[in-house]
Amino acid sequence: MSPAVPILAVVAAGSIPSASALASARWPARSPAAAILLWQALGLGWGLAAVGALAALGAGPGQAGSGHAGVMRAVLALASRAVRGTSFRPPGAGLLPELRLVSVAAGLLLLALLCWVLVAASAAVLRARRRQRDLLSLLAHGDPKVPGALVVDHPAAAAYCVPGLRSRIVISAGTLELLDQAELAAVLAHERAHLRERHDLVLLPFTALLRAFRWCAVARRAESAVALLVEMLADDHALRHRPARELATALLRVGAAGSPVPSGALAADGDGQVAVRVARLLRPAPGLSAPALALVGGTAALLVAVPAAFLFASF
Amino acid sequence: MDVLWETADPLTVRQVSGRLVERDLAHTTVMTVLDRLAKKGFARRGRDGRAWRYRASESREAYVTELMLNALDQTGDRQAALARFVRSVSGAEARALRRALEALDRPDRLNPPDRLDRPDRLDGRGPASAGDPLEDAAEG
Image (cartoon, rainbow over all chains, first blue to last red; front, side):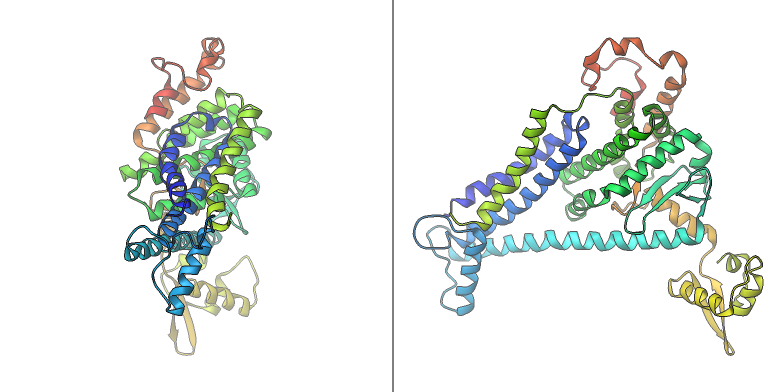
């Protein structure tokens, strides 16, 4: 068996309890950007390791003699032998050849699935945004109270942005009524931060993963945790221009006015997030220390580098 | 589009132009706009002799409802198309947030001295005190 198999398998399997632990950890609220980086590394590392472990299990060591050939090279070698028709039999001892071919196929299928859900989720997002922009161009109008934003005449409290190249910030008439001028400015600063930093692109892979693995509690917790971190990041940006209290009361007012959600499962995702954000604004904790940040960054780099090395490098 | 929403009858391009009181638009401009609305499905058109007649596909209210269902995250389809200021909350959480807001609006809570003395509470790790509305809300 290739030495890559146990290492990749450990990374892939270990990612799942690690994601659980990261979702319940407290420190991410103190440095949301570092935590988001770790989430991204965890997601990417898991994908590479899971695909790599399955492929390595089937493809064998890839070349005669000692030393490790990249898993991708071993898979390619297996494929070229199969195409030439010399032998479907992967080299090396171990599992039955049939089982090993199934393992390679499973790895490639997983890779295809992960790529596909990302493409499908992106397409769905682009479609939904185009529809939003079309509807907004028909229904919304500007208002001097919220410069740069569109207003939709509806009594419910809503405030959101439509990210993209032609981005929009939207405030409902209900929100306009609910918040005072300073709170509205805080909301706009928060939404502008989302648009400027393209937070939607950070969240997209996690939403895609959730769409593919709806049944999986870890996928749900990961998406929910990253969504909260992105909001915290935008809150922090808003704080550079507006006092914390304005943003906190705006959050509480919009949250408290929120119309109850019909489906319970969906509501549970967002539950508690507003309170966590408000508590963070009113009782700020210091950011992570430099060594702690370095530790997070180093862990993130290793999570991606180790599986990538086994997949693509020979040594 | 407002012109189409105002009437139930299908209108020709000329009729729409005539009803656009505030702006003096060229006939071809109105025709292009109506054509685009029809292509996007917002207007339906039918032949009436040599002219097209346009009417709104849905009422203005129906479109506002569609927009707001998405805006308020109530379609049941989780996707990252929009970034909401506040994600959907349950009825229980909304009540808890209302209590927290009332507590915050009370002047004696502006600068709670007990909290300043207890830095261990800063990260929320401390023991939950009875009646802290924020923590109640966070625990749902």
